[in-house]
Image 1 (cartoon, rainbow, N blue to C red):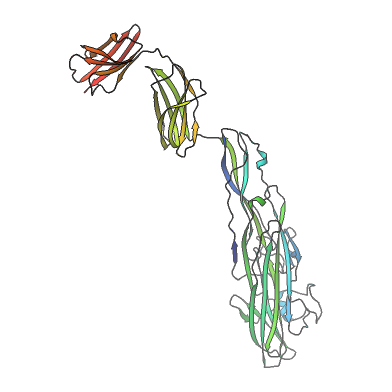
Image 2: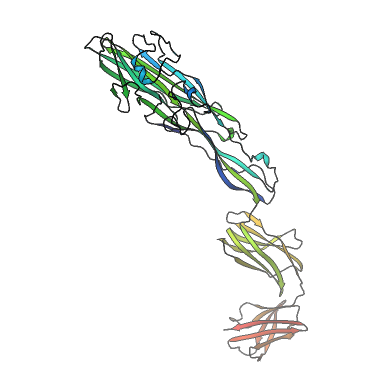
Length: 508
């Protein structure tokens, strides 16, 4: 008697909390954890009823206590249960009676007497158990030591027990097949009124993880006014849902009576999740009871149901896997150099990608150990195109100069470039134009390690321009042409032995 659970499905969903914490193992300096993949381990579903896809596993596959007729490879343990419960007003039930033929039960299967006058129980409880396999973590935290430069760790992020609803014989639900009502005797031509109550409920429990759930108590009530069968006679009725209509069945007719399907999800705390395999069990238990009362009349009556249920469970673990990788800089420097010349040092660098880059701080040191900040260049924020930067150190140290970049993100975090070095000779000659000579006369210049008497000012056509040279302060001079200069380009040169210095002056 395969049960069909035609009433509404009950849903109870407990949301799983998702954890995104990275492994607690500390990688080596310069290395970080990077999330690489996520997946879900699923075991099951394991079911107490028929095998998936067969639709059947014996004529009484879902009745209380009769799943032993299912194939032997079904991972379910039958604990208890009675497949038929009945209630008769005046007893005298036994195994005979026409209303048993439609139930496909050929004889009382042992939970009541088998002779006339013996009573089957009016209530029954059945328990069945399924076994689920725990998750085995192939990359636990214990497999990677602190200070590692490589390694993979998987961490559970959520876990749940899922009680599945499904099709007939392949989901979780409880109910009764073929609610049959037998009218026995009574005054011929008279009527009698009967009140019928059926109660049923399905519960599940995980003793290991503490998950549990239930359909809650489900009740079907019927009031039936029938014609008396007459002395020595009887006749049969059956209830059909969902319209709850009564009719007179033929022998062997299976009726879809009533039932409730169940679907629930229970969260397993992350700290409780087993990561080393093993098994745990889910117990399904169902109860059913039938009661019969007579409101008026004198006919006897019997009410019979075949209680049954299925349970199907699966277990799921979500997990995130991490790998140790080199810590990528938010800014990738592809070149970094420094070059001395003309009394200065040019510090040049190029980036290939920038992410949230606020600025660079240029630091200098005489010994490559103790650095001080000497300047700053703004970054380009976030960009994937190459960017070039130049910083001029106008007051380099005499001798060794070491430089490094301190890159600062928009959130204030910092990272350092490699260190580079260059030698600066303080005795290098220098000829430098100060200010903008196009806007002013006299022309201000700076001379270092050369004699000002060797200066010469000419136009582009080679015509010499006479001038006076006045000392302004230290190495700074004022060059004052003796005649007013017209607009154009002039060349200021200095030759002293092998030294050749020149600067272009543009007057507008």
